[in-house]
Amino acid sequence: MPTTEPVFDQQDVQISAEQTLYSGFMKLQRLTLKHRLFGGGWSALIERELIVKEAAVGVLLFDPQRDELVLVRQFRVGMIDTQQSPWLLELVAGMVDKGESLAEVAKRESREEANCEPSQLMPICEYYNSPGSSNEKIALFCGKVDASGQGGVFGLVDEHEDISVEVISYQHAIAELNLGKINNAMTVIALQWLQLNKQKLVQQWL
Image (cartoon, rainbow, N blue to C red):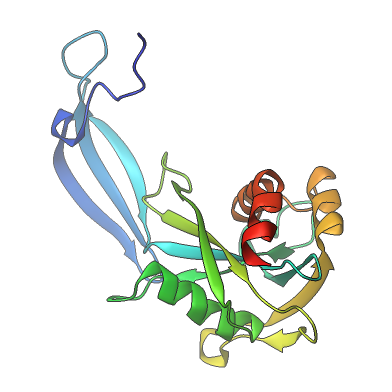
């Protein structure tokens, strides 16, 4: 029977040199390493750049009573050279501070970015955002909220956040997803999860 378990693990990688090229909001390292090969033996020494980031949490804020989502829109520098507006519609999200649980981050970021706090949290998944170049790990939740009266501009001034909170219907969000207008990975994954699990979730939360 075929196995999905990996053949190798961390013991099958040897790092011979590590250099920090930049250290700021994130860290950029250059690693010189070799690894075992599927055909046997070891690779030649290779260099890889690694973006080192703290773990992050994203929250899909969902009102099961009104069938609405609370999303946020903010400027994203990675989109300035694209045809699309760099102000993206996204999940509430933020990095994990030392000593915080993932659920604590989900609630804190919901307060800071959307001025609301979920009364219940449902784990969606954990995944690595771009393992070819970064160690960033993201945990996703769906949070139960009351979307009535939500909206406005929030965010932490000392973190230069300027965040517009937008309440949209579930159907509109899925339509935007299908049109490719919502196209950042965190939000795509969360919305697709909600498509698969919405009926069961609504029954549980109502």
